[in-house]
Image 1 (tube, rainbow, N blue to C red):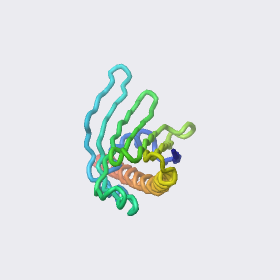
Image 2: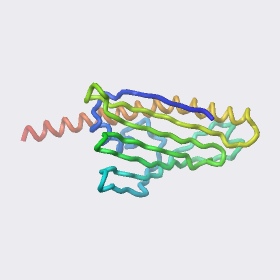
Image 3: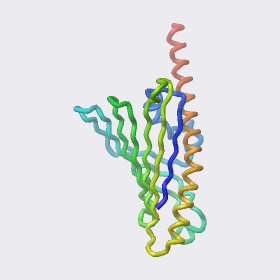
Length: 186
């Protein structure tokens, strides 16, 4: 079992981040071109708590290491199941995801959260954690190799994902500002 974690401060308010979270796989995010489709499976609002719960299925282009596709066979897509919770009272967004593709070989459980910065309302704290468990029994060296390769991929993809989301946030802020300017000019 291996773990990955990272933390980042976005220079955007929690309101901006939580709203644009739904746009992070949009066409103008060139860092998310591996995402083929995002399908919403269900969405519900708890009337007592105000928490919005959403289940999604994310389909991605697969780019597994050559040694792994040789071992398991090639597949060009992968599926990820995600449940997210938006809690307006505590001002948190939490997303939990689990791989569905190759789940008999490896389990990747990821949790991402966005919370307002404690000292600066114009910033948002992003935390990302993943637990990676290779499930091939008995072969410790292979399990370690799979887990280590997955952690390394997470490191690269985490930076790429943050960069892409920064772009979405910047474009959205500029579009909103342009819209306000246009309305003020009327």
